[in-house]
Length: 336
Image 1 (cartoon, helix red, strand yellow):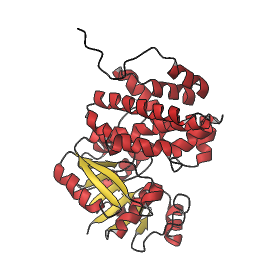
Image 2 (cartoon, helix red, strand yellow):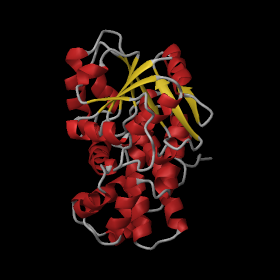
Image 3 (tube, helix red, strand yellow):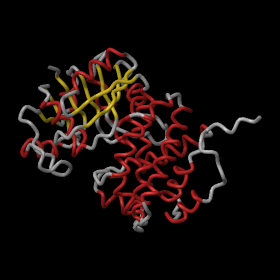
Image 4 (cartoon, one colour):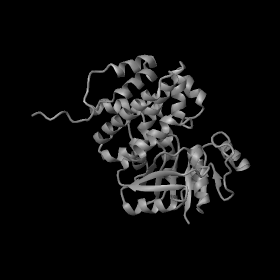
């Protein structure tokens, strides 16, 4: 069995701690705040995020990040906007060759880096892998069947993580396309916000299906422009994560979108959700990145206009529906 440290005690980090402890691994769960660490230790339950889910007795809690450095594997699970500061805090304590598995999803504002790209810059002596897929913390923590994908540059690393993570309720596949796996997990949050806005406006299943279908096209466009494999977006970290995030009420991005569709501002919606709505920051980063690379992303552009420029959600839908005529596939008709 492995000794595993988990950096980040939000819902996802806690759910993975619960699951891996039940797999028989030794778990240390780090919280940024000592007060939160004390609450977790006292109640052995993450009351704000996973109420009713007991954290196994063997899980240790700490707010001292140096306690997490001597582990067989470190799992990073902070909010995406805190990844760089968290990595900087970890850096003085880390050993050369340390295996780090990132499970956070998002793009960094300003740099447009994925989470693994941040980790490589702040922890260059470490081996980095990523995991993504359709996996709400609320369901994983309760042992509801779930599948994810682990991506690493080295096949043996991916296989090692696969062995650690898998159990009868959590099936893990492997992949070598790290950038594709990460981008699918990050960008689907933007489309989920749009799906929620559609629901908040009272639009139908047809509308949501259109947003999801054309959304994955946009995600694939940006991903391939960044060097990802197109087929990755047909898998768990692409269409799989997109489906679950656009359709489930566990999704904080969809919840925020519904509130925006109901007429609330982006700030008010995020405050009411009371959790980090990753799609908001990711939308800004994706828009800037698409502009820089010359990638057409009309859904992301309209989401940006609603979130940051004061456009109405109804106008955004109208703008999408009234775009010029297009062929569905990326290739134009062959000329005879």
